Length: 189
Image 1 (cartoon, rainbow, N blue to C red):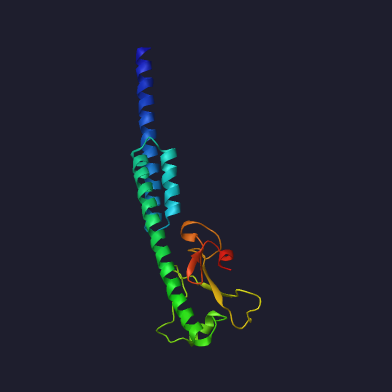
Image 2: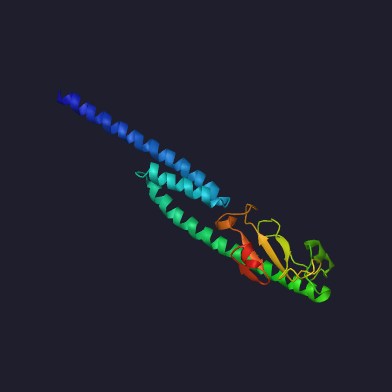
């Protein structure tokens, strides 16, 4: 009876050890996949996988690694978002200078972005955001009495990495109206 009990305990210990090794192997595979996402700067996907490791494989050494990696990825992601925001703001400033140059020359802001081709190449700004998506331009009017051919204001917009309206982080929309950043396009009118 004692021998049977000891054999049973030994079997349980071996099974438990096998499960831990299996969990460690699964956690490692997930960790490696998260690392690939991080290398491609797909931080959201990487963080989701690392969180899964923390929950599903909390008893493995990869759970602590995942916790540290999540903190690092969030820090890098926030730094990149700040850099991208600064890049967008700088590009909006260059576009503003070009628009002001156009307004001095033609007494109104352009009706379309194509009108900016009338500027000398030295002054013409880039019309793309850091992800290669177009920056959208829309002429505005301070009152209904302003002739439609002579807009006295403008709104610029970029819709983030995905190029679609709405979103947060790298997908956050940015609006710039008459030389200042605004929360949304309605604030610029």
